Amino acid sequence: MKKIILSIPFLFLFISVHADWLSFRGSNGNGSSDFKIPDTISLNGVKSWSTDLPGRGLSSPVVVDDSIFLTASSGSSQKVLHILAFNSENGRLRWERKFKATGRTVCHNKTSVAASTLASDGQVLIAQFSSNDVFCLDLSGNLKWVRGLAFDHPNIANGLGMSSSPVIAAGTAIIQAENDADSFSFGLDLGLGTTKWKKERPRGANWTSPITLGSQGRELVALQSKQGLTALEPETGQKLWSFDDGASTIPSSSWTEQGILLIPSNGMTALKLDTNMEDFKQIWADNKLKPGTGSPCSRDGKLYVINSANVLTCASVKNGEIKWRLRLQGPISGSPILTEKKLVVFSESGLGQVVKLDTEEPKVIQTIDLEDTILCTPAMTKDALVVRSDQKLWKLSH
Image 1 (cartoon, rainbow, N blue to C red):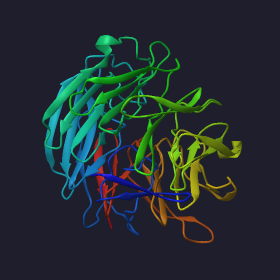
Image 2 (cartoon, rainbow, N blue to C red):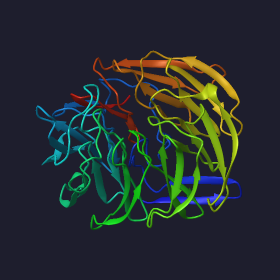
Image 3 (cartoon, rainbow, N blue to C red):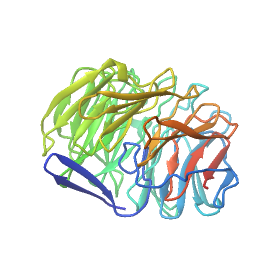
Image 4 (spheres, rainbow, N blue to C red):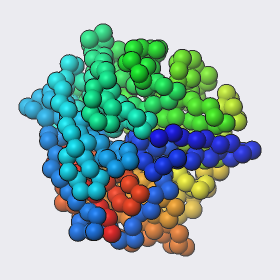
């Protein structure tokens, strides 16, 4: 699938050529989609199903055409790495590939070696694991290349585990591997797996994911760290600019249709980029919009963020003005996802909450209890939700 990016004066538009969910927080990386969340979702829906998963995992599903792809890790030390493909219509396993981790698999008991979400360009899959093993497969499961980054950089690891998800831009797989010791980001050639560029990054454990920024057919990659955010040319790694006022190391930034970049910094900070994305100005910051562990999402000029007290806040992307607040049931680890009229998020206990947005007083219109620990961000197909736990993968329809 290709992403077409059009620019109208002071307006940035993202248009998906066909209905896929290609990476962490969707094909545009901001948690928003034109897919329709059903008015009522059910474990017994006409297109609902569930299937068991091997081992553990916090990675989100990705969707390409009629397949759902996912990662997992198994074994006593999670050294067996799984990449799986399922039929979206019935949940049947299409293929599974297993690999042995070459790097460290030590992680906190709440997380997993399979915490990073796959990325796809509609032709291949990029899988990154906490062991710093990176795999490229085609959609049929054929291995194209593999990189064990720990061979050259054995110190890019930490005792809590790593969870940054890759992105694909300009024929390049962007990999963040940032820690207290060695700390790097890599641009790997999508076809060959060779290193196009390597950037030394601020030392410090970092669980954020890179995001892509698009305007007038140009695409940049933004890397977030405790020091702030840096914009790079994805093909060369050339630095264009940086925001140096600090940022979170857990929730990631979000790019909006208005050409405004939302950074979890000093609560939430908004940067307005010029049309060629080579400069920016800060337009507002508000410490009342600080997210918990989930990343912000945005759509139609509105920002949605869930704080550590499980309060969902809606604010204006343009000026940060708070529109309303709604308390949800938590605790919540994953990020929310968003359509035109609804927002969905899952609590750690497996309670899915659907919030109706197009009313004067937004409210939770449905809950669905999967009765399992869910720490990931859900995904969407054109007519259903897809979510995983350590043990299962669900598709939930009307």
